[in-house]
Image (tube, rainbow, N blue to C red; front, side, top):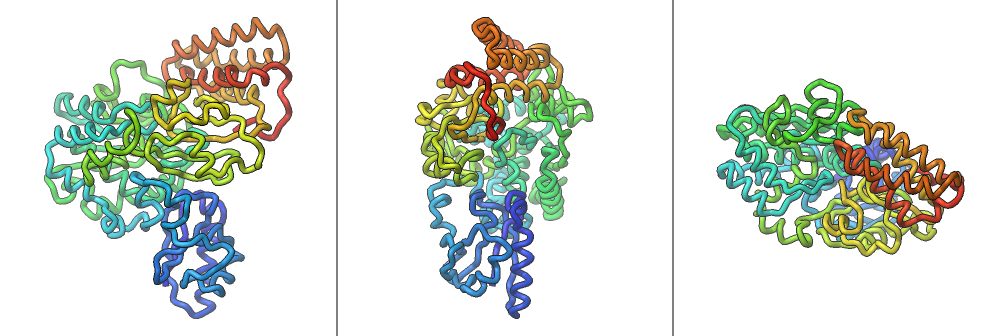
Length: 518
């Protein structure tokens, strides 16, 4: 008898470890031979801990399971998939999961994260082995043809970045994975690093083959100790099994990876600040040009991609670029990985082809607000993303569609707010966030955000509102056009959208509410 209990941090935060221990103990008390396996999360956080029992008809899910539920599950017939008030049914028939189309996360929650054999049995390393039969230009061409764009926020075509690095003169080149996932309401990188770390390793190895790099680094957010440990363990296992090192998968190509813990600064999620930190320096923005693809880590040509971008590459090589390009809409090809958070009934990770609307995601997958109150605002793209009112919920999940409406898709974080939110307070929070997290390199970000907090305070206090609103508008323009990076340059998105869509909240003193910050 086999049972799966997630080792994902989100599941562990709601007692998954205790549930696992109780299952082992209950089996021992009953004299049953039960094999406990720890898998990653399937992303249905509203059902965690999600216990999956292997039955004659497949894996059947129960959740959310608490330690006190375990004895009752055994009594009911857990390993027969028997009826119970926590029974969700066969995993692949759960509506939340069945309606998704998983590419990047196709193995998450299914395999044991650090089992090379389990990974390979579910299609792992097929893309890498195919890449080993291709020349570098052909690998880059396949990634370009797939339409894959950077999933870290900017949406820059991955193939173009790789081609730039490939075309640089021979010598030391690097692959850097930006795993410093710092946006509030986002967790996809962590879920993948904890649940399917070999997919990231495989993607980085393919990138190394494509551009002639022999060294890679994974820069993991310091607040992700479990993800850091998971990646470090997976890299060691991959090396022991010949998928990293001097002879990648028995070929004549060398590629190895180091896993580094981040500096604990939001700004280090910006690629040039990340490179500075990797070099052992303070994480501050580098002026551009030169771009990292030309002069990156230690002054050498460097591919900098985020976790989801690199982890998608193996499927493109394994299945062919055409299959990836068939999914999506417009210039946004493939799947979008959306993370639902905030005041939403069913929080969790959703992977679907680009083109679904924001409203469909929130209602069909999220189930509306957790409070049951009317939805008022949705922030997409992290703390620097725009606030969309209910009237814009028909916006398609598509890079260009969001840009047309003054927003950005970013890393796919969606934070929901009901009608108790005070949008003036949210705008102030965005300015204050920028002030706290600024690296201090440029004046528009460092000083502009500090002055912005003061101006918003004066507006909501009713002090010379017309003049201060005009001043705030000018300040947002300076920050947008004059900041060296996206921290100061994108702060006008949440502030400006709050002013534009919810002007009434700036016309009186801010209300005292529990939901004033994300």
